[in-house]
Image (tube, rainbow, N blue to C red; front, side, top):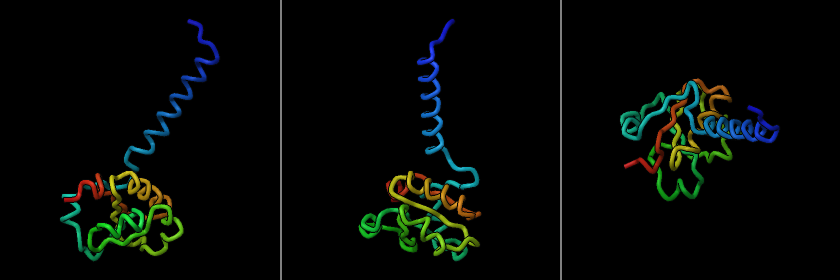
Length: 124
């Protein structure tokens, strides 16, 4: 079977796109994932810090008491406001931004990072 150059390039491009997509949605190595039901059992613990990475407007409209708001687009510049010695539990609206924030925190040297699956959409 003879494959032309365009077919090979298209095939490689599709593989690349799939890999990039999977990297964005798959859990990050070293990041713990919990449900909102599990979060309810962990709220208020002094050895943990709670981070909401939604926009300020989203946070103001509804948030969980005890969560600090640092929007995702400010997190890299404001990560110094968090302690690397305590676990960081991260939430957003649906789980995508908190997953990105968790990856970023791991890259910045935070050891204990937890992502809340489903975010505020799953919070009841």
